[in-house]
Image 1 (cartoon, rainbow, N blue to C red):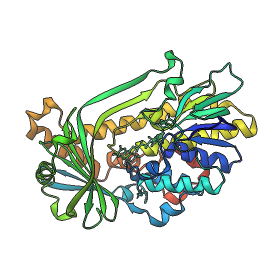
Image 2: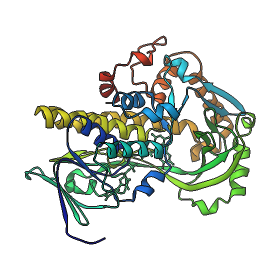
Image 3: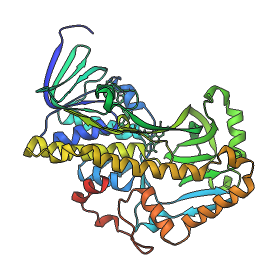
Image 4: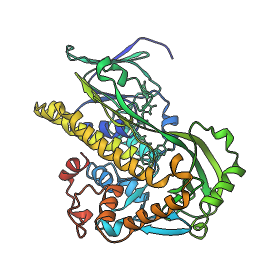
Length: 421
Ligand code: FAD
């Protein structure tokens, strides 16, 4: 397509139509703040990209309060337990029981993305698809921020980079503020989307001396399967026969509880990395979601944290743009880093439980027995399991003691933004 450069003037420019950008755009528009969202990929690509699928309790309560969860709650399924398989024994953490009823919602990310795009369309503000941003200008000395795309310039009061790991917004921070703290784990996960002959009833984490394996529900006929592989390995080195053989050995002991794993519809290797930016704002630019931090898929936290960032920033921007109060906006980085590190620590703790490090492999029987003991602490009544359950399901409440629990219905919408912070 060619033609004259189009100029759009808006209050908040958003780069990236993933969960962070789409939630932010919807919430701002509903609050009367004008936005324009640019997305590099086509609509079809964005709407078909299968990634996450487990949504935390508190995040869904937030989306519900914003009127963004109608289809999710009508068609999603709820899951309140997960199993750990270790030394041939299956130990169940009934986290719904430990949190007063909080459960995950299972709803594929691409379905949520479709719903959020449809809402923007209904509001008369569809994203500009196939418009990769090539530059963001938002330094504090500017009266306005600017997002440049091929054939389109978005002029705005604020710009929010929700463009994920490989976007360009982070690079718009000055050199001294761009740094991240990062960690590369010494293994990767082969990730498969597979057909199943019946729904997976709950997440299964298998801790095995040969390596971790996981099975996670997605839809009635699809599951996500993870298999630990050596760091740097390639999917091409994992033909289906090899995958099936490893799954058989690592999941032995849970075969009766699992559906038959059928055709593999998608596969790839996830490089297991964690990262958290040091600064998530500068001048008129803010970062949210994977552009601000990266989590491994353990604990299923990335999309949830992306939505939580969007919820926080939406409220701060509404206070600034509608009420003239900039205090919350100025302290965005501090709040989000606090939350991101808390989640990063949880995800790291779960990873360490699920994997044997290279130094542990030689003493595998002893280490596995220790891990079995740690899992026992999580699944038995007591404060350790209760705290883990709250963090896992994201019920967002403090855990003062073993008896502490909160009824999900007691969480008021106004406390949700606070809680996801
Ligand atoms: P993204 O979803 O990455 O969206 C960023 C968007 O920005 C993309 O659409 C991209 O095309 C666009 N973009 C990039 N550059 C530009 C540019 N220059 N101009 C315009 N647009 C641009 N998380 C969970 O919470 N639960 C799970 O169960 C879970 N499972 C996962 C399983 C897998 C296999 C993977 C890979 C991830 C999983 N995650 C999970 C993580 C989750 O998918 C991400 O954390 C989430 O997508 C982050 O959302 P986001 O909006 O920040 O970024």
